[in-house]
Image 1 (cartoon, rainbow, N blue to C red):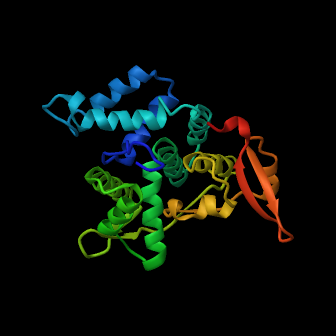
Image 2 (tube, rainbow, N blue to C red):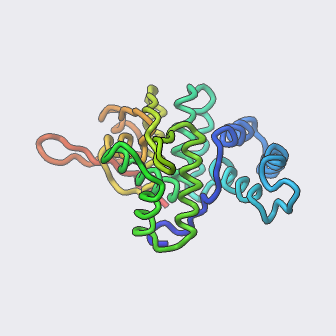
Image 3 (cartoon, rainbow, N blue to C red):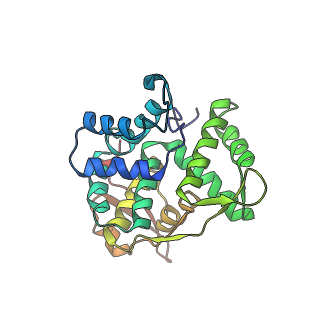
Length: 253
């Protein structure tokens, strides 16, 4: 899979499951305790009556715990900050935190978001077939790509960020949610998106207002605020003072 590794995010994941997982982590539960609680919560929803280790319940729990518990190496600080941010976050800010955490844990989730967001900007709608075709062009002609993309898109509908546009398999955006009113959340979101994009330097606007963030109306922090953040590194270009943002060396990897 060129540039993304394994797909990983291959199940339809509901927002309230992520909320439940984050709240369990917030309460200080161990990884084993969280997995057990998720298994009980999803028992009648996924893989009911079958071996959960081979079914969708096991896969869903693996996704949920990778996002909020056993995060990829190097993401622990961002996860810990997210746990603190989510304590007092508004519902829209909480959704944004889950969204960014999913992108950081699963680049494929962000790739689907970027592809969907670009189509919405270009034509006002995004067809499932169009998203699948573009992802296959980028990642290879594999049925697993199309199948996983369908499930991610259905997750977006479950989250309420996409809605049916009339024709089967065609979606519209459900409106942008204002997020990032606090300096801490905006700076955290920039760092997390940079991690999801593998440290590729971009402008603050591109990081928080790009296609991958299509459900949200996020405003970047000021240049001064970013300059005082030890985890970010800014590069100024030209007389018009264009700025590219990257991660400080110690946070990459």
